Length: 393
Image 1 (tube, one colour):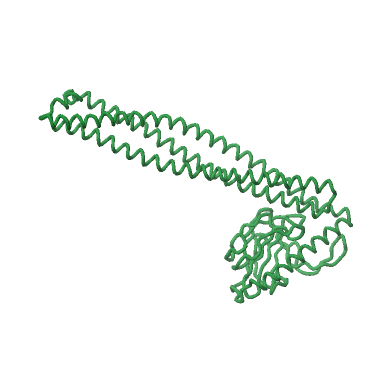
Image 2: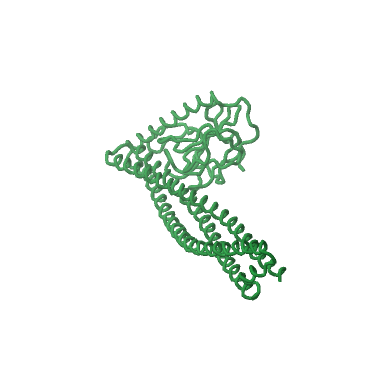
């Protein structure tokens, strides 16, 4: 009798302790993951709110520009800014959808763990009740009365008290677990609804982005019907690019490494068709000759632009009426490369890049009537024919 009684008491206490520790450990893991996922989602939603505010401001400025009949290039610059913010919105929504995927997976894991915990709690409690029912002589009172001495009786009474408290704790945890399951189901439904809304929003933003691309491209193409307006836009773009090149020469003279990184230059896109070569060309509208300081590579909107060689990014910025979004990489030894009209810059000033790294996406920002990459190779800050310095891959 004594051995059986001790066995029953020990089994019940051990089961209670093990379950409590296990439940606490699992709960700590899922709560940590859930908080982390929720913080990410909250941060991305805040970023979307900020971008919406920026966009509203740009749209207001664009409306004012149109009503005042300002220059075409001023309108194009505002449209490019609007496109840039919409691009960021699309990126952020994609990140949000990914974060919500994580949140849904995390909450689903929590729900499964909570349901498993509930089942374990129920099974443990029913198992202990069955043991007490099956072992008639091992009832609470029987265990106390079978003591060999008063001291033994006190010890047994204390153990029984621990079991009773354990039962109460188990029932409280069971109630909390069931409440948690209801809360997790509601949280999962909310995350799935937000996920569906984000996907719908993504489709709308992509459609809006395409409309903005079309409007920006059509704006410059419409200049063909007005020679005076075309010449004005052309001159504005030339001045903007000249200013950017002058700033670049100063920057290179102060920051360029004296040692070239070495190796051949690589072709900066997957596309290989040159739509406008390096050299002097006559404008079809103004009939004026001008120097095309690089090559234009016809590539699809959003296709990747690769660093033509390793080096340090010394410019990752914006030239509103000329290059649009553009990047300059210093390769040392007076050699640098310039990549213009990007829809998106995917590097930053000061970054170290390796030949072949993606540094941006093809676009039509700045003085551009369609998606392409304007690519230059500069020697000591001066343009030269890129075709003399690299092999097409």
